[in-house]
Length: 165
Image (cartoon, rainbow, N blue to C red; front, top):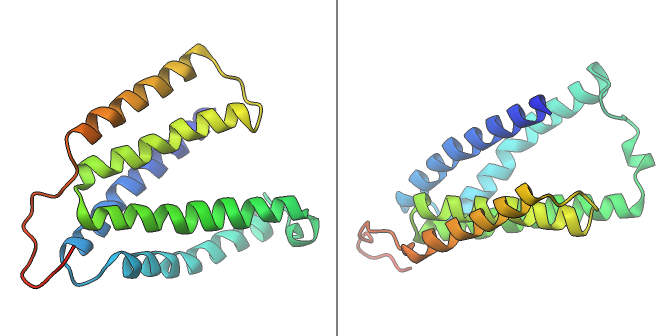
């Protein structure tokens, strides 16, 4: 479990630092959310292919024949869950929000809703244990989201001339 937590912390740090770059690019008004999302998707393809080859051929930590082994249900989870919802829709709505609001408010809200949703769906859909600690954590996350959302989310930065929101 320690390795899993370490990886989760590193992922959070990567997302936290990386999205500052996205927000800075959006603040420039030289690109919009769709451009940021397209660049993100395109840039990830080559490292993902390299990581896949290493995982399946070098480390042999994943089955190389997964395309033959995966059931239609597994394909649906990958395409709809990972691809469309997490990969496209989540990024699309988050970047669209960043275009109009402060990352210091929107990031904690978006990434607070995600773990609360994961805990609840993990319990309901996947049959994971619901403990008092998990339930309390979800309540605290939701309370934090309510507090942040109550602060308002509109950016204080003035809009450049000739732009619309």
